[in-house]
Every structure is written in structure tokens, then in C-alpha cells.
Image: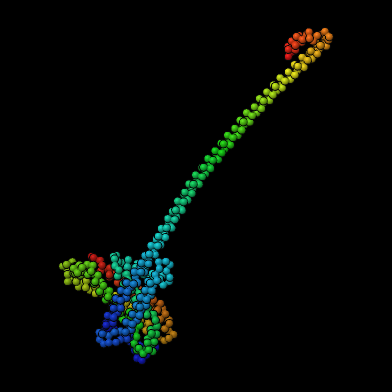
Length: 157
Length: 254
């Protein structure tokens, strides 16, 4: 149990061990640890950023959805308006068409009436002449009374 | 078990180191051999990890090494507020080396000495921390570092001033000097003797247990070994932490 030269030997060994640890063991390991810490920190930051991005994207999507809804509502309103317009327009056209048809029917009736009148007149004048001829039989010289006959005929016409 | 010379002879035999040389120039071959071998084991393990170190997912060996490194680094950061490339590796070396020394204590007391006696070596003391030379070698190295950093950081004058003018001011100079000298000298002595005392006592108790009848031994040596697991780590830890504390005190200007 005495202090002796072993002490010196042990001190030398210890010095060598410390030197070696300082030189070759500690720096690479602590560097790797720091590196990994940095990596983890970066990863966490990236994850956080991703989360933020998702929130932002969700907000954006919500905005777009809202816009699309408004847009579609507008379109529907417009379409309804247009449909009403079309209905109104066709109503108008139908009315006009109807009026036009009535008008033309009236004109046709008028024309037919005129024609009938004409025919009637001609027949009446013929009848009148025939009746006069029968009454006047022989007495009427067609050549002599040509003037009168045509006058009457014109009056009847 | 007990060899010739009875109980006392057995105990003495187990506590006698393998020596060469005379007087001061005696060398404890067993202490030198085992501490160097354990130091080599420590260096080999950490060096092999350091060579294959990756920043990705670490393997089990790297995981363990990283655990040790972070543990020591945390201790240093907690105590020492400065820049030093030395203190943390020093702490790691002390912790691991002392722990490995102490761990030899858990080997059966007769095992290695039996093997060595078969090889013709008469005396063998396997636990380096039961050798005062080993513990003092550590603590004196630390003490030299304390003195070195005290003078380096505070300058010769600053150090002299601290030694003479604290804690009671310049008028009490001789008394201050005496007090501070005792304080400084107490550091390496307490470091070395604490480790030595704990491990020597532990080893002695293992030897005493080994003297008991064979069927009683496990009942005692098993709990004592479990208790000792705590002690060997604790002593290594205390040595490391006190080294860090002393060195950070040396770095601080008062």
C-alpha cells in the first residue's frame, strides 16, 4: 500500500487516454450529434411549415369554393331571367302572329264578300234582264233598246 | 479458497499486488496491465463508433456511445460555462475508465487470481481502483490541470492574489495562504481517497464473503454485488463531476 512509480505509469496512461479521446473520439461523435440535432430541428420546422401550408391551402380552397358558389348562383339567376325573357318574347310573338292571322282572315273574308257581291250583282242583273225580256218579249228590240239595257245593267252593277 | 496462512493469509494474498522493482521504483504490474487493457477497451469501443458514426439512425453501439457522450456533455454544460475543448473529453475518459476499473470488482474475487496462479503468477490484484497509485495518478493529473488552468486564466498574479487575499482580505495573508493551500491540496487527496476507499472496502467485503462457507456465499455476495453496481457507477460519476467542478472553478475569476 505504498505510493510508487506505478503512479507515474498510470499518469502517462491517463494522459494518453485523454489525449486520444480529445483528438479522435469526442469531436466526430459530438459533431454527429449536433448534425443530427440540426436535422431533427429542420425536420420539425419543415413539418410545421407543411402544417401552415395546409391551413393556407384550406383557406384558399374555401375562398374558391365560396367564389364558385356565388358565381353559380349568379349564373342561375341570369338563366332564370333569360328564360323569363324568352317566355315573354314567345308570348309576344304568338300574340303578334295571332293578330296577323286574324287580320289576314278578315281580309280574306272581305275579299270573298266582295266576290260574292260581284257575283250576286251579275246574277241579279242577268235575272233582271231576263225578267225584263220575258215581260217585254218581242217588244224589246235589242238593238233599239241597247242603250237602256246597258244603262240599267250599269245601275244594277 | 483459503490458501496457506489461513484467513489472514488469504486476505493479504488477495490485496498484495504483483510487483517488480524496489523502493519507489516499484511497479504494480497488475494495476498497470489491467488499467491499460481497460483503457484500450474504452478507446477501442469509442474509436470504432467514432469511425462509423452516422447522422442517420444510429446502431446499438453508436446509440450507447451517444448516450454516454450526451450524458457527459450535459454534466459539463450544467457546471462549466465557458469554452474548453478539454473538459468534456476528459470527463468522458475519467467516467468510462474509472467505471471499467470499478467493474473489475464484480468479477469473482478468486477467478482471475486462480487463472494467474495456474500461469505461475503468484499475486494478482485485478481492480485498479483499489490501488492508491491508480487513483492518485488520476487525481494528481486533474490537480495539475487545475493549477494549469488557474494560472492560465487568471495569470500568475491573479492566481497569487486569489491564494493570498481570499477569503479574508490582504491583512490576513498568511492565514489565507494556509487556508487556500489546504483547500487546493484537499481536492486531489479527497478525489483519490474517496474512490480508493470505496472500492477497497467493497473488494475487502467480497473477499470476506468468499471466506464464508460455500452455501452462505451467494446469499451475501449476490446482494452485495447488486449494491456494488450502484457504487461503481456512482464513484465513477462522482470522480467525473468533481473534476468538472474543480476545473470550472479554476476557470472562474472571483
